[in-house]
Length: 223
Image 1: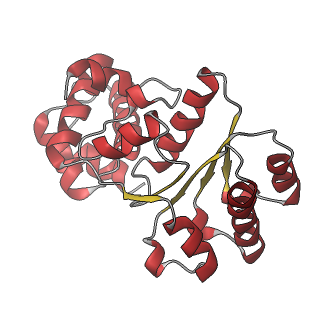
Image 2: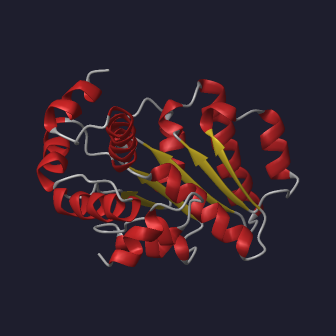
């Protein structure tokens, strides 16, 4: 990965340029090009699904296309009515594996509205679980499987290490490779949570005028 890509990663607004696509190039390319009308992505919790859904809707907006990102917990009949009225052309629904019975019906109705009326809407959905093990209606699963389904792969240890090294260098945080390796082996492999802990440790070390050491990391990890 180029350092510039990693530096872009830490900007705030979800965008395809600040998503590390390693192992997921086909997924990212398909989303960037709006390759399929119905797309579903699944992967581990905090693997970047929400980032991709928001990047997708942000890109649609940048191209002058009406779009909306919504978590499945926020679905209601008013949203369904807004979709049917043509308010949104590009629709991203996050965490559908957590949908209530009513939420599943709404998603099902959105699929049917788009298909039966042959409207030019695009629907992107996400889930943590593979749909085969998700507690969803079979007819909804059938609708989802009628489009493209992608498994979002997690970053490798090397890719995570590279990202953290670029981040700590940019921020001027004196974090050694040994301490970063310790985090990867004993904390989490989620980049966002790793950065949050690094920032926390850095602030404590600065206030207490300490070096960043593994004992300091351990104390912060258990808080």
